[in-house]
Length: 110
Image (cartoon, rainbow, N blue to C red; front, side, top):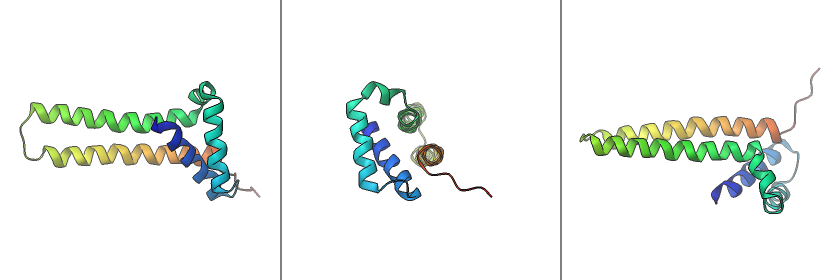
């Protein structure tokens, strides 16, 4: 349920930052597209990137929780936090770069 909202916000930020469209207009347009054409949305890269971010973060958290249950160490919480933050940050940067590439404007070449 969060994926359409997150991808609409991210698209609006990318388009707004590039000057392609006003932030609110872009957000409303993106959300309308999701609601009007949900199957088309599921096939778009914007869905895939946000889903990978959310799925990757939750998968890492689940792996860390499973490993913590099997080992009894005081360091588990710290290691888990670092692992989850690291994966989330890396995936978010990749996703944001892709959104900028797809929804931003291209620089003029000389």
